Image: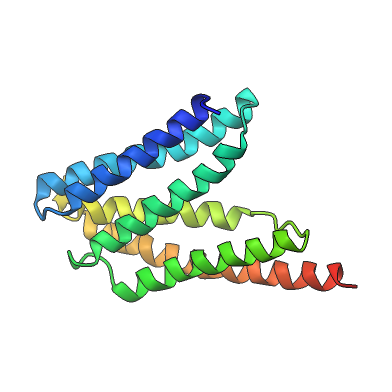
Length: 182
């Protein structure tokens, strides 16, 4: 159970409270530290999955913790950015609502013996969400780049991908479920 990929996932879980603590403060330095730990956590997401496949170390614990850690990192960071005025509350509601709906849909599908495959839209959604949140954590201008503007650009793209991939999951479920019931 405690293989290298799972340890890396635990590191991501440890980074989440650090991101949240630094987002409690409104300064430039604290935003930088929040972005640093958020970036580290995002990199562990890529690394743990890669190593699990490469080392043949995919575990039930890893299959549970990896998506949970992703959802916690993204959701909690977005929620913490709301009172800072860095992200619109309705965007957070839509993105978290989509995550809950897709998770529920996958649970229903599994109970019916249906597997809905993840597709590349979900991976792109996560990448754009992560880049957006990294920019919104940084928020200020660094090296003549306004990271709030950059973060908002990636957030709008992420929102589109979030809705599109959510619709795609429901469409797949409808198609597979109708074939499954015949």
